[in-house]
Length: 112
Length: 109
Image: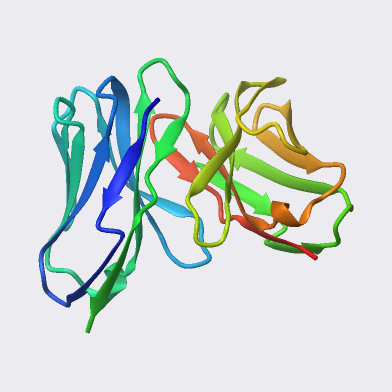
């Protein structure tokens, strides 16, 4: 059974710092991995999708990497801003399934 | 472009009352559709998913049900709400990526 863990659970950093959020999963037979952000009281916004054949994806100040063999993905946020404050969730879809397994998220606060 | 709608945005219902939440998707055809629940301070729980009209897979047996009467319409229902049904209900669709609707905040009193 796939399990997805995100560390740390919460993170507080000063504005301008580069930071890394971690996601680990127990079953390496994945179809893809997707990172989302969730603002309080809102739905989830898709940030990046990494398919199983890819090693990384980039969008603006965000870079996500995937290492299936070690069961890990990282989300790198460059030059953090207060507007980046949100909960970040990773989700893993196993091969041959139609559903994501979500991590419990990392709550990020960027201080001005 | 694709858009996903959910309504209502908020709902307060007494215990034992029925529930119907609706989700519709625009701008795509034959999407995979999903219902999730997020309880206060907890993670995202998959309730149901559908890969086609009339095809529903249940992840949580309880007192909830789902239906997909049309290709881009997904409905979450209950005949009698429990206090434990309170939470934030999210509909999502998936083509290549998964996209979420704005959610419905349900409070059962």
